[in-house]
Image (cartoon, rainbow, N blue to C red; front, side, top):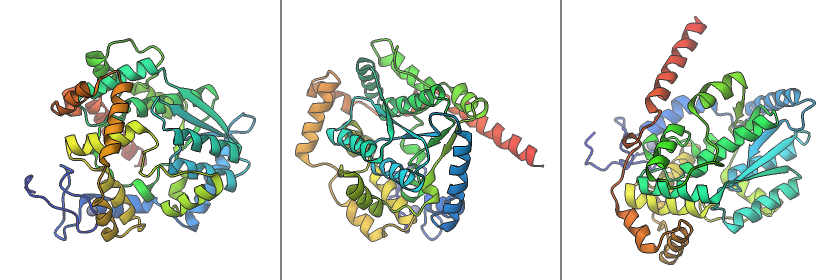
Length: 377
Ligand SMILES: [Zn+2]
């Protein structure tokens, strides 16, 4: 494929802004083919899924006997996690759930309002982890200066590190997440590097940070790849992959039942994430995450390609909102708008420009696959 030639998939709306995309002779992209061949066989939006989910929840409850909680769920206040909380509470009322919310300092007021409502109405215990803001600010600014595409790393890493930490403290083995194939099966890996790479996070902070990270917890490679999954036997389950999950229907339900209010965009529950997805990524890197999200909805049958193309014509930001958000972000990170703009203009970097565990991770995956194959013989 010629790198300079623009091409868009004939089935979804992914295009050559994903540098690693490829198309077959019908013009269908690798993401669509992967959905058909690899994801569909693991996706059960039907009765069969319901049975599989029942078996899993049953096992979770058996393992949770005598414990304060059976499982943890992450609660961001977005549609997926809010709906997951609703489904679990109404379908499995006996399940002992601990909801975890991480406040990285960027929550919109609306997100706080939504989360408070959800736990009150559903009567779910909530653990709120508040990240030390001075440290978070230093790390966030370090990432900003690093010019890496994925600016969500400080928030995402803190979220998972805290989730593991709390689960460990309460001796809970199961994480139930709102992650799902129905609405987010497509996301090109070239658009954002793994937020869980502790080595990269520390390297970026060492180069650009100013203060020591004392309270900010991280998850190291061995802990994440060996200790938690094989010694502690933590398991991640995605109930919405065993559910007929439809985003629009889910939204209607949580609006009606949980008094939930819409943010107006995916992941816009955080003002930072909104800026990052609707401005930083598209203007600096040419990545429009809406394309991945809308394509996911197309392949799962929740939207037509025509509707998606129409949606993409809408502007990412309105001018006033952009100016306000920029001022807000700059101030919060301790910069004036000129300094902020100056950083925006510096040249982009990739994860390969900083130390990482990328190779180690890749080799471990190959080793794991080889061992599994050998064990199957
Ligand atoms: Zn496609």
